[in-house]
Image 1 (tube, rainbow, N blue to C red):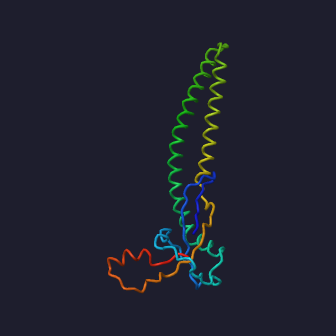
Image 2: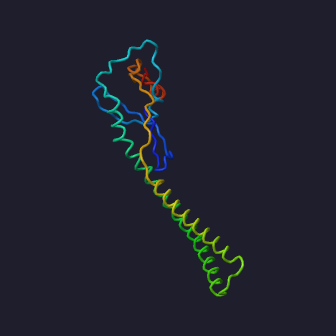
Image 3: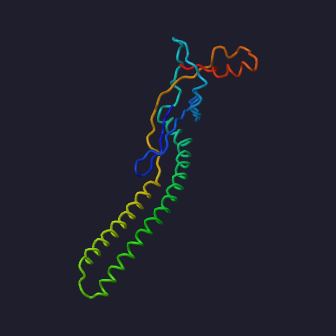
Length: 194
C-alpha cells in the first residue's frame, strides 16, 4: 500500500491518494482500489506466511505504480489545475490591469497639470512621485503574480510513501456452499490478512 501526492511548482500539495499494488506469485502487478482492504480480515495468530522470494522487489512495484496509476493521476490533477489557474489568471489580469490603468490616468493627469502650470505647484511633485511609486508597485505585483501562477500550473508527482505490505490468502471457509444472501455478507471475509 502506498500514498502518493501531486504537488505544484510552489511545492503545494494539491492531492493525495492511497494506492494498492497487488503482486502475484508469478510476478504480475495490478493496481487495486484501496477499498480492497475492506474485503480482508486478520488471520489467526500462527498462520504461516508463504515464501515471497518470487515476488517483485519494491523498486519494480513503485515503477508499476508510477506507470499504471500515478501518470494518469498526474494528468487528471494537472488538467484540473490548469483550468483553475487559467480562471485565476484571467481575473487577476482584469483586476490588476484596471488598477494599473486607473493609476496611469491619475499619473497622466498630475503630469498634465504640472506641464500646464509651467511653475512649481506645492505638493504636485510629491503627488507625482507617490503616483509613480504606486504604479511601480502595481506592475511588480502583476509580474510577481504571473510568475507565481506559472509555477502553480506546473504539476509533478510528489512524494511516494510506502505504507506497508500484507499477504492476502484465501479464507479457509471459502469452499463451504452458502445461500446467495448470506454469501454476499460472507464475501467481505473471503480473504484473510496475514
